[in-house]
Image (cartoon, rainbow over all chains, first blue to last red; front, side, top):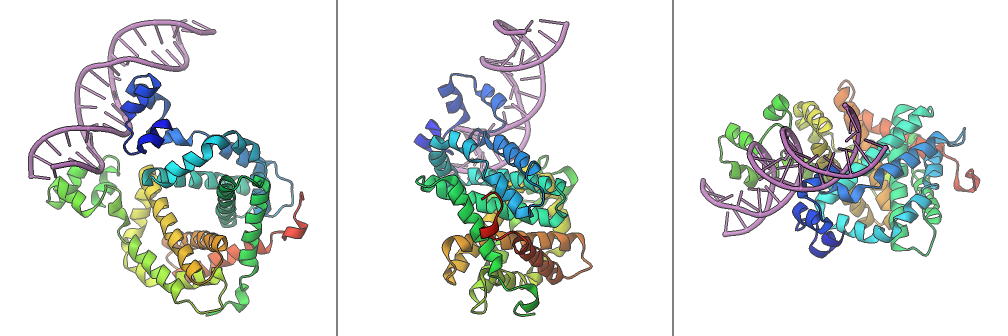
Length: 180
Length: 180
DNA sequence: GTCTATAGGACGATAGAC
DNA sequence: GTCTATCGTCCTATAGAC
């Protein structure tokens, strides 16, 4: 993170990282499959937590509410890494290669959520949409929470999911859709 | 595409592509910024078409319906590249590096959609959610259309957006949300 | 003896500088 | 179109832990 912030990601070499860490350049690649992965270490934990929460969600919940319930349990996990969240976000946002990796992580997490929903009996394609939209809302909430730490993550999450509901709630139902 | 299908993306070298095309290796990089970009040429056209369609969408439509209206106009564009769609999808799906690029393109397209919605007066965060969820539905529809060409893309699109509505339609409203 | 970690040489491929 | 920095893989060698 120090080097990425000092020179930017692209101008930081793996040799430089290894030197700063006092190890051989190839040792770096033993710990991380590539130069980007360094910034995505906690992702597996978050995924596991969310998937587990969906698995354990109360019976009878609608798909989106299962995702919501899972998201509401993520706060402690994110709280731990909070000091690094803002600079990390900044490097990712300003580096296309990192943005790509970030999106890939998001997609794989959302796929995992969808699978968890299917396990709970949610219909195939509905599960995919619920996972993607729920994740989008959660992501927006986390972003807002990083920018505005005054409010709890939970409050941000609830607001984002409300916006999600408003989105289709206000949309015209299928029978009266325009241009049909 | 020939080389990517024969040997897979990773085992295809830029030197090999250039040789097959009968040009110098550096010439390849004059036409494409990198090895992956070859497969994402049409993306700019699709983005322009969707953004334009949102800009021209009828007044008074809800955000998601603006996106829906835009998606319904994309069929001719996709029809042109249809012969390559299935093999292209296959290479992308089986190559992590290409999957990352694909997701990046999707994200940038969805960002463009969100901006277009904001131009039409949709509130900031609502625009972001509408774009992401609408795009997810469209993407699912295109996928289904590639796999099952019997039906029109339009039919697939309408079905996917209906699923989207069902998603939040069936979800418990905020006031009665469980665990509050 | 096996497991795990570091070191480091050699090298093919991508992509930037010029 | 030449030259080359850098990434990332393959390989073998060394050493501590259990």
